[in-house]
Length: 58
Length: 137
Image (tube, rainbow over all chains, first blue to last red; front, side):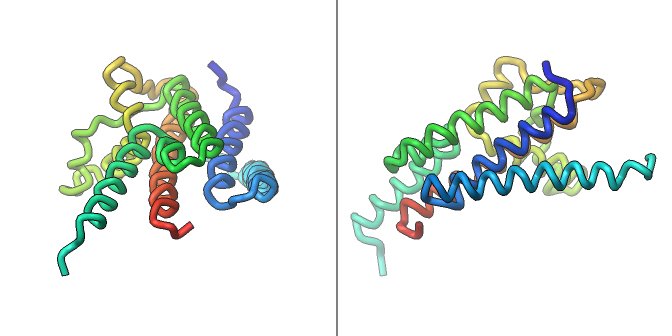
């Protein structure tokens, strides 16, 4: 089974974005735009937060 | 004022719709004729649930829900409610022996996250199906 954290993160972001897009928008074009934005937002936020936490070892 | 027969029929079918939507992800939307949305939700939520199981996530047993009320273990109680949100798949997976969880697995927390979020998203899907049925959406 996949153990890559990045792959799991991308998969998680994809499915959550997909469901939110389906629930919050009615038109397929709007769903695609909103879902894509949400997906990109998830990835960018995770990567930025990951790098910001890099200097702080736990 | 007492409810009329038509209102009672409508409210009982609404309850049935919500139960179906909870038990099988996307069933509420399929019932309401939103076939595309229903099928995508069915596949997406069940795939999330299966990924959670495959990455050694833990399905919290229903008995732990008491921890929420007597405050002995409130977070596990909340996790149980979230896990139960996925509906019949939860009971099926438990009956088949899946969802035991392996804390030593590197993906354990990812698995838990997938299982919890799949359940919570399904609860949102139930609310959405209800909103569509009553004409709010």
